[in-house]
Length: 307
Image (cartoon, rainbow, N blue to C red; front, side):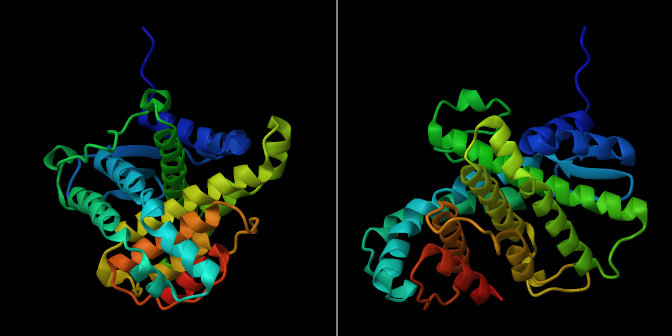
């Protein structure tokens, strides 16, 4: 009888699948550091952390990535009409949102889905919440979803989760090598930057070798990391959003993950990410009197406004 793969091997396979062009490198690092992967009991909040000996998370945290990721995808249908109106006409975004008469019901439905994710955060077990009927339950079988949008979200959630696990693995490396930055906030940003670089460098050669369009491969990775940024924002306690001795300001982390991509102006990354950020700022009742003439400029303005 064939033995079931260990949790450590399952996580390694996830990372190799998410970043196939660096599969051999991540396998080598996995062997070099010899850390464990520990799946702890589910509890309130989320569990995802690391030290020099192990990465630790629970299954409810994986469910949270899935539920919030699939929920956040709907931000596109809620906010893209106002985004398009604002960037085409040059009117402030908050005015465009008021003009969009159909937004109300879409936004209400969106907030209901986000509320379900927030209730999962507060619960001890996934079974304690009412799972939204229009969001599939977590599965490792992409093909079983049978819906193009759900399959796309499966990919983006996988990238988001891979980013978070690579972030934790960088903590393992810092601890084992005893070369972490002098402060914990600097270490957090260092882990974000390393995970982003690991997932986005070397894409050109990979795309050429496999006959893919480089811009499309880069776009999808960047969208997954943008989704990770929004999920990490939701996982971060509100009282630490402005930074403390452990964490940098959340806006600094979002910028490290989302800002500075050299993607074409017509890339879907820009409206997707703009809608994610608009949703985030609407949840926090932030002012949106922003004038921008492209989705790219809107993303930059929203990130600046978050600071």
